[in-house]
Figure 1 (tube, rainbow, N blue to C red):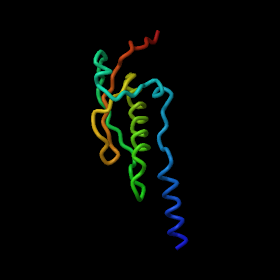
Figure 2 (cartoon, rainbow, N blue to C red):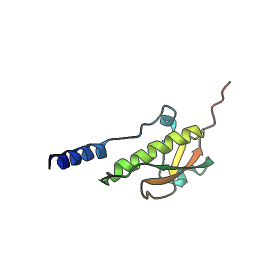
Figure 3 (cartoon, rainbow, N blue to C red):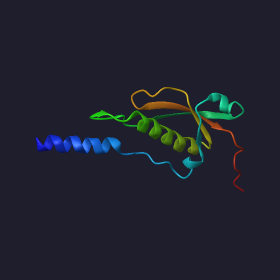
Figure 4 (cartoon, rainbow, N blue to C red):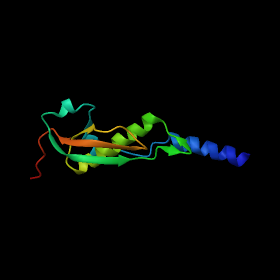
Length: 109
C-alpha cells in the first residue's frame, strides 16, 4: 500500500512540473492567436511540436498548451521567425504552429 501511495505522489509531482524552457532566442518570438495579426508578415513555414500529455493520468491542459507554445517559440527562433500562430488544435499532446517573420530580419555585419 505504501508503494502505491508513493507512486501516486510521485506522479502528482511529475504532472505538475514544467518540462520545457524557452531558449534565449525563443524569448524573442511572440505568440498570437489569430492569423489576422500576421497578414502583413512573411510566412516561413510550420512547426509540429509534441509534449507528454499524460503521466499515469492526463496532465493539466493549460500546462500542456503552454509547453507546446514554448517549444514552438524555440523552433521558430531556429527558423529566424519572430511570431507563431497555432493552426491546429491540441491532440494527444501535439500541435502545429505557423511561423512568421513580421519584423525585418536582423543583419549580421
